[in-house]
Image (cartoon, rainbow, N blue to C red; front, top):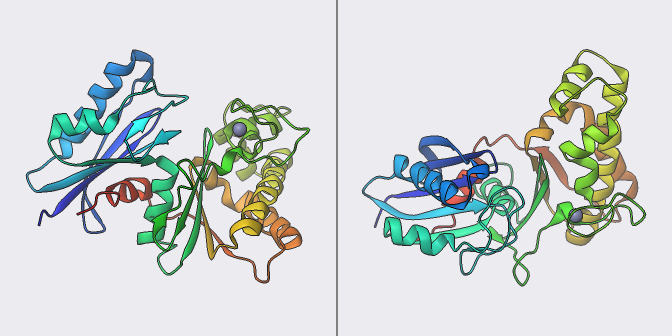
Length: 289
Ligand SMILES: [Zn+2]
């Protein structure tokens, strides 16, 4: 049996590829995605990233990609930030590397990584949320990604306000519009801040307005998570992505809101992800050996 698998986290800015043995990341590279250079450049960069961790004994490659995508065919349907519309990544990469390739949604891979190797290890029902430029979601039940018919888990595009902000997915009041980087900046309009990191740094210095930005975001997130708790009654919710680093400013309000609103017997555990390469490890575990 072949020993290694390769896991890839395909993001809008960076492509991270890792050589994985069991649950361990043996080698990791990061290559710029360069989405502005077009489809062929992105595929070239993806191949470059995989090639630099490739070794003899590789059983397969797992890719976590933004969606929506067809995980059965390995086909990207459309991605907002990467020009891979209608590209069959599975076919392209299998032709190049001659090993089986599996593709799934990036937030699904993140959640699977957490469910198999870290915070969700001891739990049956794990919900994952990645909060950054957008909001990704994943549902892992008994260590398997729940796909519904195909694209289940788009938790960032569930609405928390039908009179709210229009989202570019076509829905109104999507959670993503309120808690992602975009949501933070909308709440931080009165502040001299250009990025969520600026807002975070102001909050660290004790700026009350900056702190209240995250407190409001925590409330919105709590409203969204209450819906997931009422639907899934999960054992654990794991939150990752860049914005999750402001945990100490938003988590109190988030938890308080769920406690007040959720209609379940016992509130789930809610934690910040601490598994650094959850998406790579989760993608690697897509490979069926
Ligand atoms: Zn939306």
